[in-house]
Length: 440
Image (cartoon, rainbow, N blue to C red; front, side, top):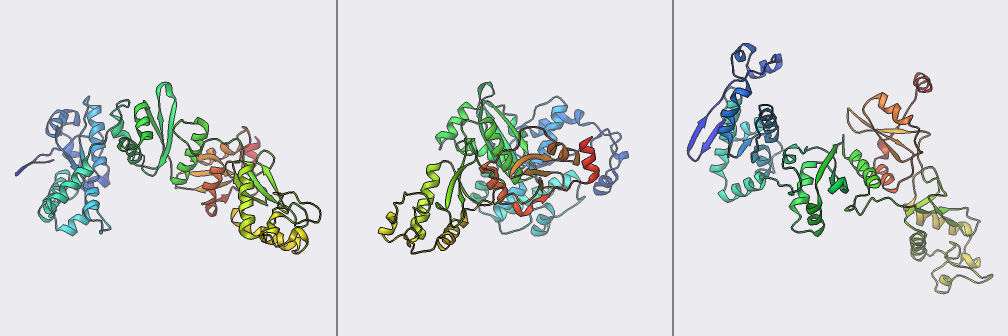
């Protein structure tokens, strides 16, 4: 530690007996051998002294949560609680010098000419951070530095209904988080690339938003699930919202059914038909356009396309045509006259196809399920635009595919998420030996 009180600076360090063998690469990196720590005190013995020195101070470190997490857990094992306001000098460097690409300690050493001794030893690295602090204190306006420190070291707070210890446990990784009320009633499901940051943003905004204020007042419990990446977080969020139906989630809620526009043959009138998701296999149909919440919405969109592209509403089934009479749009010169034989049905059908093209639904491109690799450790398993789950091993993959539950249902939100990454999907190839294994 380098303890700073105004102009007074105190340095303190101690070796620690870890009660286990030091790996050879750590010994090479730090120069600390097993013989050096054999007679050193354990952390439990040092804990009261370390805690006394840190009490009430701003905890400054490079990648502060890494160091802080180790200390907090070590204190807990020794029977002490420990909390401190932290300042991460990686984030401080990024905040003060956004034009720089690298902010690791070696980069700061090079950029600021910091003097290094015994690199990778704890006290030496702490002293490098102190040198960095002195450099920026001398070279930057005090107001800019104070503002950055206050912004980055503001201790995040949780609503009174939540355990304060959660503030240190929230991960800075991708995933979903769930707010629960009294009696484990689900309140809200969200996703983020940084769970910790997003959770605290809810409670920082509760003074400006009635929704966030209501959430802060009702929340009693908080859980989260880390995911390999953003796609799995999006899919898991949609899945949880539909399963739990949290009261604060307005979007992604379960829909009763959908309507789509089915394009029929050119020589059949009407040339389109409105179909529901209960009557049509949305995942495999080739000629479906748009996903609408109701027949009314689908007819409104179809009518708008007719006005925009000069299509015949009679030919689209939106108006009843009397024998020999044209549609109402023809009287207003908005229809090119297919209803009166002045445009061929084939030409009208071609223009209709072009008008609908941006709404076309993609049919599932594989004969069976597919996977999307989001990390080296896990793949997303998908079948007919339905998300089946994550597989972290071949055994988990085949277990998901062998599930005897109800067939996956087409879901609008899942489809839209997967459509954006469809180019990354690869079909599952089942070998003969795997097929035999599944049959057994």
